[in-house]
Length: 132
Figure (cartoon, rainbow, N blue to C red):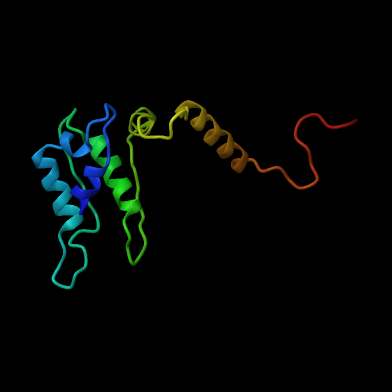
């Protein structure tokens, strides 16, 4: 099922996504998403896949997240995309976000929201200079 999903996607250059997935990556996707126990439940509910640099880790992470989000699940789906630092998060999200979305602008908006949550404005009070 995962391979059918990947076959419907296109890579950045317009080629079919599945044509860009090596056989070892196909086996990883198939084992994780398609194998089931005898009772029909998924065999795995958590995955940790390590590889050397430049071996499609970020791309596979995003593809797996997208598939998990779009797949029906009786208990619902929770997907986490984890990065070690902001640069890695930017790399993971920049090429996969909505067209025209600026990661730096989104990050600034997040930081602004975090500051506002850390220092909420009390009802009836204004920030900045008040009247004297």
